[in-house]
Length: 315
Image 1 (cartoon, rainbow, N blue to C red):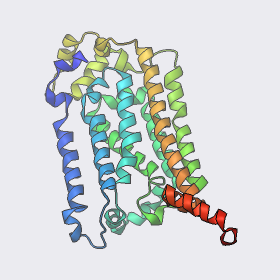
Image 2: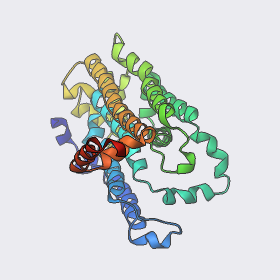
Image 3: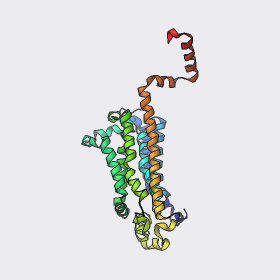
Image 4: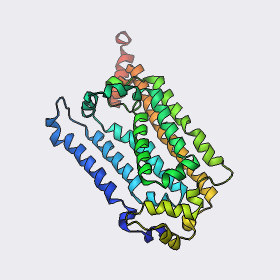
């Protein structure tokens, strides 16, 4: 990672994003803590929920504000790790930390009820997977990366659609928690297939697809836009004549293939973990006797079985 030494601390660790995310985090901790008394119908927020939210914000910063972001301009692999952390890992953590009473005021905003269709599981599934896949069409990615305003707007859009995609699964509002049991598991499985065409295209492409990582001139333009001190494309080319290949870890095609594989692996691990959690929750609801048995101490369960064996009439 010696290339990072050529950039300032502010470039490697975005202070603007850090300040913004820290402000949101402190506001959340105040509203769910000392300021909760100012919110009507509020309830205490468990510590584990607060930990999930704060962890989600940290994950978001690591993905978009740490050296991962700069390295993502040199290697497609780091770009995909950043995307996976920001839009696959962070959103369910943030939703898991949201109490229902904190989201309730959003439903009272005039006209917001007309957007209820955006929470339809089919809509959320299509919106995120389509938006993410389109972003990784070569011409789209190369074009978006050369326009700062469009780049930031698209990332905000991906974060919104990712949160909507996770909403039917990690649903903090009971009134909208319509997917249960096999339906919720089917929804998660369908999402795991949603990015498969894009990942397959990236992994099995016969040649590098992205000019950002193969053309030094295009890379210099893209890189100049993400540096706070505003270095010119010409000066960056003088510093790194090989463009993205300056890091020199692997060939562009190998880098592209590894990025696609890592994205798919992270996606499958997260989706698989949540699928197991949803299955266990569903199984417990369908088998209350097993849930009661699980809640007993081992010694209690043991003596209960002995009592029933010694006196069958009580079974």
